Image 1 (cartoon, rainbow, N blue to C red):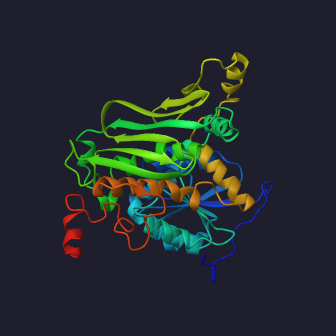
Image 2 (cartoon, rainbow, N blue to C red):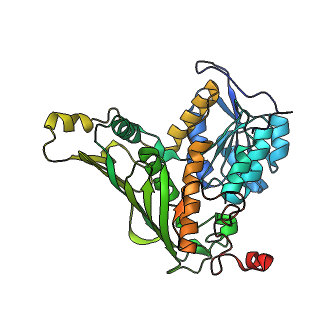
Length: 386
């Protein structure tokens, strides 16, 4: 059910409308400065009118450098005074639920950086505040965007490569002790999870976007190197609804860093290997023996190169806003990835196979990803359930 009484009317401009959209950025750290503000400023018909940060010094600097007229240290006051059409959240995941709900209730569409929120319960609470026709809250899953995924989705959807059979999803990165010296890192309350949630979520989302829904997962997780509350490595076996079997590895212990997805189909293997973003050159299709060369050449034609990027995601989000349609990374389109993340943690911490749809109200892993598991949950959480 959506919440709509008392909410301002959503923006329903047609895609060709020249109406200027009022945008606000919440959180003025590195991802806002380096990715979201440049993306917003590059789009015609979008005016960044305000920014919000708990640090007055940071927000004033951000606004001065970006030519933004209205700095704020409070979200609600900004929403009341500036009435933005869209809000980009670049804040820690622990405050995404509260901030998303406030923005939706004010009539603004929301683009929320990953991780979207610390639990499925939080995500469902955010989703319940969406209107039937908007405003909507979408997650930044920019790796879905670009010419590479678009071309491969089409090949898989049309059956050109045959049935998907085997998949590998790898996010093996390296983070040293200095990285985890920041007190909020490696903590469930502030970071939302370890590499499964905070790092590997992008490749898992892209895998699901290409292969479709998952059916069951069996996982393990470890805290092998770093003095943190969360895991620093996880592995999983995943069965998809279409019958394909996959492996997932998420790590911050791997000096040779790589992000990789490989899908073996009946007639070809398709693979993307990169680190933080991909372009056409990062995608490779290897045909099975006997596939005609002209067929393989057609498969390898990805068209004009459009790299994955925050710009591509922000542009798509603005197009959806103008058209009044639900973004692909909102609602069910975003929840399925967070559900896989939640299921991976539950399976790893309970040593059980977890099925899609299993985690809901009443399940220990619905409100928190650690599920209150001894050895993983913060001590204060265990004391509260004793």
